[in-house]
Each structure stands twice: as structure tokens, then as C-alpha cells.
Length: 157
Image (cartoon, rainbow, N blue to C red; front, side):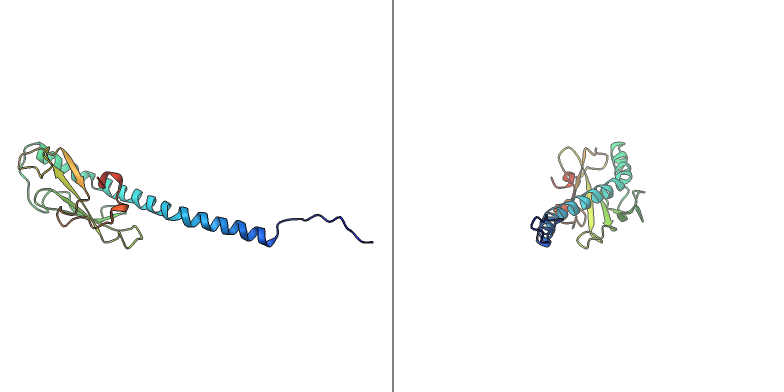
């Protein structure tokens, strides 16, 4: 006896290969964006680790004190956080962070700077006020050498 009425059970190899190809194309499109966002999130954490130093410098300026000089602000150090290896300061209070822990050679061992600014957009004079901080400027104190696409939005302006 011969069966003429057979049903296909399961997927064929061609169908499975097409599904795998679609998944591969979607992964190739999505994964670089996810990695870039993860790096920017880590960079935000690194900037957050500089907050105590920003506060010290802002307080000193806003209380009318004179800048103590490079490396004497009292907030410098090493092994600051998971993503910041060292913090150094210059004579006007610009902060330089040496980065680590990103597992990306475009960022690890590179530097990020934060510079205090008065209301005219320049470094405050001794006894002046800090109105804002500029992040990521290449002209400040050795400069930021992190590629701009990995800086958070607050540093790309």
C-alpha cells in the first residue's frame, strides 16, 4: 500500500538558514549601537567620579579663595573608581582624569578633562566664581583625547 497523503513536519534546512541569516543581519546592525551606548554610560560614570573634585574646586573659588596651584587642590588621587585610574589638577582647577576599565583601546589610558568656567566662558580669576564646567575640550590642560562619539551628550556641546 502506498501513501499519497503525506504532511510536512518541521522546518526545512533552507527555511532555518533564512531565519539565521535574518538574525545575523539584525545583530550586525544593532550590536555596534548597543556597544557605543554602553561606553557612553561608562563614560558618564567616570565623569560622576570627578564630582567630589569639582565640588572642592567650585567651593574654593566661590568662597573667594585663591587657587592653591597644580596638584594641590586636595582631590587628586589614583584608583579613584572602576573607570578612573587617576585624577590630576592644574593651577586653575582644570581636572584631568586618566581612564581605564572600558575594555576598548580607543578609551583606556586616554584622558578626559573638565574645566571650571566663569560667566564669560573663561577660567575664573582668583576669587572669581565658577558658573559652569566645560567637559571634553581639547584645549584644556592637555585635553581630552577620547573620540567624541564616546563622550556623553553633556561633553559634546
